[in-house]
Amino acid sequence: MTDMGTFKKSGIPILYPGSSVFGNTWFVDASASDSNDGKTPDKGVAKIETGVSRAGENGTDATVLVRQGFYQPASVMALTSSHNGIRILADHIMPLMAGKNTKIYNIGGPDQIFTLNGAHNVEIAGFRMWPEMAQTATGIDIGGTTGCVGTWIHDNAIINVEAAEMACSVRMGTAECQYILIEDNLFHCGGSVAAGTGIIDWKLATRSMVRGNHFDIIRNAATSCGIFVSNAAAPRGRIVGNYFNGTEVGVADMVAQAVYTAQAMTAGDFQIVGNHTVNLAAPFNAYVLLNCALGLNYINETAAVSA
Image 1: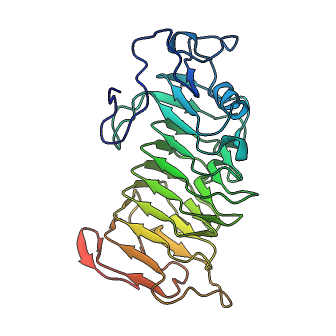
Image 2: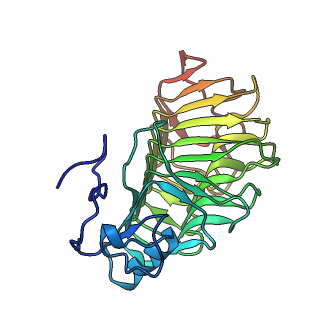
């Protein structure tokens, strides 16, 4: 199989349409028709949600390959146990900040783009997304009502610029989740909100990691942050090697955690290491970081350990 990706394992290339059937693989093309069966590159369906629905109806471990184009979902793409093992991939998975041209534009659409409830081993990669800008909206909501295990969100650009409120790009663990990896994404988001909102809202997601992402906190305020750890009972978490840039000097935070007196993390159970921050007020402790292991991080490009 030809590798059409850059740094990640890619799906089946669909630059050259053919009539071969590729197992439990579903093809999406914005210029196609939802009346197609979606089983071959030359008979793709027109909507991502149609491809996701077909995949869920035809067994687990499916792949949905989305050709470059402009997509505006009419409804939430809800992934459940029927979608275990699904991979929803742009046909070319670009590296961070590169020329992603498979766009999911959700302004005026449903509150969420993707929801994952009881859907395990899910991969979503390669998209440029615009979540709805309301504070209640979320681009990808993992475990909103039922927990998930083994989610991999990578190589996306999630954009929500200059809203009056800062929507969460990713929320994980309202219901307990495990082994969530948020990796190599660009988050270009911001706004002024009440305390307790982050571009990533990290609730009860154990054994999970946020690694190698770029956060542009646009029009930030003192109560905004890149990652809000909003449940202190989220052990074995890792925030590693991310870059956080605040566009307004001296406000907003990299990582914030709510004060929990009854649910303090075990000492050293949550690690923050190798991150870079620019123009942030209190990168590591806007609220109270309880018993975190802070390694070497960089504040305005100067090596520092902050607690």
